[in-house]
Amino acid sequence: MPIASAMSDGKQSHSLTSSHARKYKLEFPSGVLKILLLVLFAEFCAWAYQTTLPPPPRKLGSPDGLPLTSPRIQLRDGRHLSYKEYGVLKDVARSKIVYVHCFDCSKYQDPFAFSASPAVIEELGVYIVALDRPGYGESDPDPKRTVKSLALDIEELADELNLGERFYVAGYSMGGEVIWSCLKYIPHRLQGAVLISPAVNYWWRNLPSNLTNEAYSRQLQQDQWSLRVAHYLPWLTYWWNTQSWFPGFSVITQNPAVFLPQTLKLQQS
Image: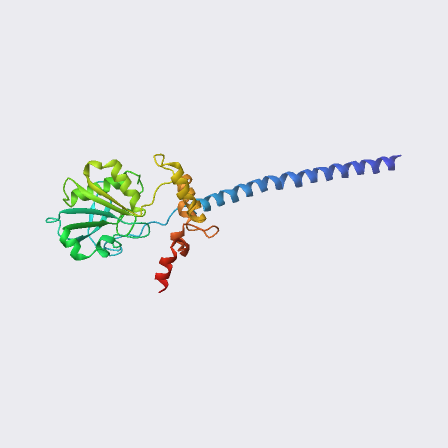
């Protein structure tokens, strides 16, 4: 009996020791694992946040910045707006136009200056000032930009250049959206407005939904997704158009499908 009892006590002791060991092995790693998972999750969130941020703008002007190639005005908030003048002198002009460029362009891509005949511009007495939108070309970014802000920038530019009480505004493609803002926020300053193949906001409530739905459905699938991201998750726009997992905006990825067959033929000829 003593031997059996000792053996039984030994088994019980071994069982208790094994049980404590199992508990120790289960409890200790689980706490460490939670901490590791938390650290990894925090690292992932930090990385993901960084990928949504665009790089800082390049510095312009002396002493250590990129050279400036055209004049700029300083706006009330301290930012600079770059511009270039075309056509006849504004003092003798019969029509004064402020031109807003499209996406991925600048003040140098002005169809009035390069597509219109200089003789026609001279005959009609047209003065054109093309600006670099904030963050483009040689204009400073506007971290507080809104739908209204660029319209007010244009008004300030017109006043700095002494364009008079009223002037024309013209916008091409995404520059056309800025013209909508001018029509809404500075209509008292406009002599007229020109929309050249304008981009539209498919979520504007005042546009007929049947037309916007039809126009939206005709966009490339990758552009439909890009527009959804820009509308519903604007803070993801930079990441969406720079990542390689999904196709971004067709203009950025240079997808030839955005061109008409006739245009492609001209480009290949």
